[in-house]
Length: 400
Image 1 (cartoon, rainbow, N blue to C red):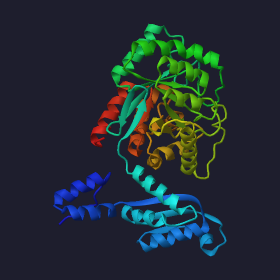
Image 2: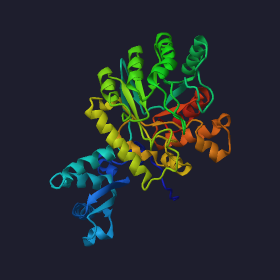
Image 3: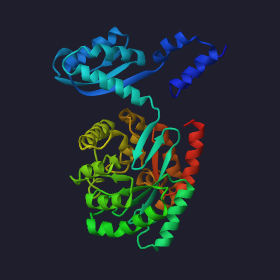
Image 4: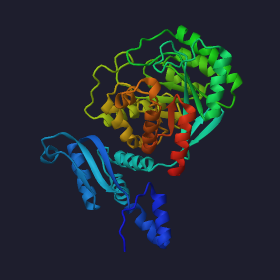
């Protein structure tokens, strides 16, 4: 008799173990939601609502951690940590549906939060095609048409045929998406005009759209004028590092074309973002920002199945912030949208390794694996062939 602590990635693993033991179907149904403990954080809850949550969770065998002041009445609001099994949360959500003070809506959001956090495949709808995510990690290959790319491997000024050969090679090497950008977003970079950005990217977009009809194309821009021209060329995704904030026309444009959009968290602007960024609650701020960005996109007519989220690794973050985001990336699965992680050759990898940009491949590979472990569905990289091999092995081991 040898005891072991089993590692289950999801409830499917648990069901397989039930079947191996020979548990009857009724027992499986009863015990399945009892096996997974979840800790759910809710910020800025009115004190009296927090006490209701605590009493209800206690009645089901769970608990809620809240501030001492919210119990004594000196704190008007408190953050709450709910601790319970999936079965206890189901009971709580059912009970909250009968409660006033916004608790009924909160119960529904808790339920959806836990459903999305459990994983499972999500679909990404693009103009003329659909990508199924979850069964394997997708690769977004980077093609910079910038004058000051931090990685030093841009296609600006490159002979068109050579640039097309590079794009073809990326697709052959395993890139599912090609991301073309004409404006640098490196720390300290300055803005360029839409006219200059179009001059840089439009020839390549037209060439790739014509010669690579099977490829999914993405335009990395914050300007609606550039996005408009790209979408007219047949681009499928607008990768907007400002999350629709910089250009008020962007959201409506994306909705009108039925394109997908990447919403990224960034503190400040590329020019200012690395000037001593600070957070009181890093993941809370990133999640809150993405929640508001998703709402703005939906309100503008962008469909939910056309939204991708990106925590903005390297954008207004220190080394400690970047590693914390990668470590806790799974917290963003609650939105039920594909997660894009851009770690390739980033500054924080160089800081850890003491390596120049050209020497960060294996550090990138390690960061990519950590990001996929946290739930990344798409990884944005320069070295497509090498990272594709890394990702394939990871996906097989973890049965994605």
